[in-house]
Length: 102
Image (cartoon, rainbow, N blue to C red; front, side, top):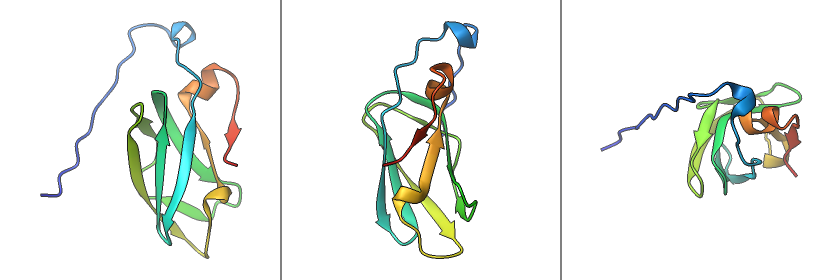
């Protein structure tokens, strides 16, 4: 069976009082149209993008559980590699940092 499970997280404190660990997001290129995204830490509201705006992600604005990965389909107007993909998360916003994937 191909069922997707969705989980919602609610924070009961104002955002400036939430203590999220730094995101430690890793992006791995699996094939021409699939990447795998994972983190050692809980990462809320991960948004994937690229500077040229040529990539489209079938599942974006995701939450990553510690040690769990998510496979995401990517549509691109040309070949791409995972180094083009950037991200921002609630973790990085609360810590006032944005990360580029290296």
